[in-house]
Length: 255
Image 1 (cartoon, one colour):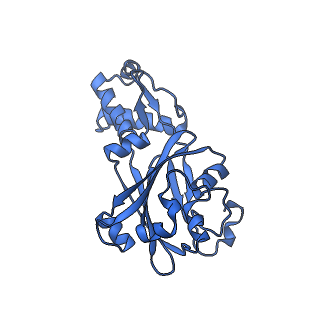
Image 2 (cartoon, one colour):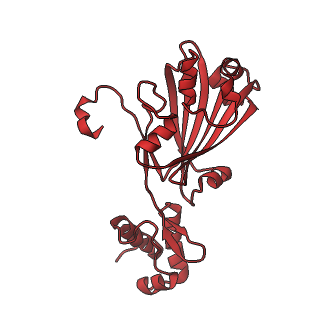
């Protein structure tokens, strides 16, 4: 006889049924009363089992209508091609990648002057507190919040590239704009981590309980100095990142 708590068995069985497709994305689970009858369990036991699935990001409360299976249409981002000028683009890198995937991009911008934090100062090799231009965008895929992106530029660069301080999008993307004025990004350093979202990130990305975020920090370099520091925060349940490194001839048609 299993010594596993009953609420855990409730969670395990429902999780298996979600994975098998018995409950499709967007479908509602049976009511708590129905689950109590099915598992011969108390309402508290069923609720504890459902809380496990909520914490795993598999289901979400559905405004008094029980629990709904969360949709997980994952977007795959090729981080080695992103902003790489050797690959063709139609607009900026984000619009290009999302459109080529057959999906619908949308983004909202704000631009402001901001003193450099300790991290920004270290990445851009400027004094802490020095003025930078922050370009912040809130990005969506098919109308669903996908990521936020905050990029800081040093003022010496903004003086050479004044469009960086203008509100709204730069149609060709900032990397191509800078290359056009002979400030080419020739390399970048990436750092990637995961954590639980802050309350503000949860609000902007509409993450459910138990859904982490993927934090992607990229420092871009010209031939002699850093030119920007970007922090992209992505929903952990709707995104994956991949890189292409070395000779991938054998990958063939899967590339």
